[in-house]
Image (spheres, rainbow, N blue to C red):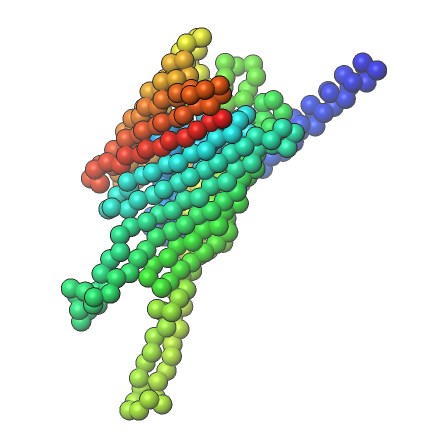
Length: 357
């Protein structure tokens, strides 16, 4: 009987490792395909040619403080954005709110929730809202404004599922609804994220991560303001209604691959270093790098550099800190802050608060 159980465990482990190998190889192949496509179009600068640009605004001061090198570090609620596979490493329930004062008086608010269900996996939900103040409607005839105001913004709502297939390997998925609007026009799409995370057992907490974000159809603005009324002659009968057909734009597809390692670890201190390589479909490849220094899992200091080797990029140095304070029992309050240098666009600051219970 014991021999049969051992054989079953061995076979189960072999199947799990084969599953990991297949999924990991598929992700690498997809990444290489995306890279090949990028190489073919490398002579053309596609910056600014994708829709839903707010999807590229990083979420979570912890990840931003590390320069955005979080694909292989992912082990908390921030994984919802960077690598959904990391949600399976949370082993608890966590609620989270993130606010970003973005460039040009644009604000981004992001909220997420995750819960670990024994025997099922980890489930998550998230919402992201991009907002700005109302603006005057201006025309060629009335450049100072018509007296009307219009609004613009974006919304993303999604759900997540992640699971540990083995003790070392995890996989996760996001399904999300995306909407952008300006005045009376809007565009929407359904997109998917997939991520994997693998911890090499014979090394000192060495992890590999890969994710594909924003895989979905093109977006096209539609609405009443693209209806043009043309008068072709005298009288009300000579009116032609023309509906303009606007261009369709791809979503900002991102392929991330990264590794993370605990450089040293004691009972009280830990230093984690991480590097990510990112391939977007609307720009050249770049690298994110960063570190996180932890004291007693209570106080955190972070630093990094974002978008290394990006052509004409403005992003750069990032810094941050965090505090995890235990209130009672297993209930913790998490407060994080990050600063990011944006060159000529000055800087951006990130704030978040979360509860783990």
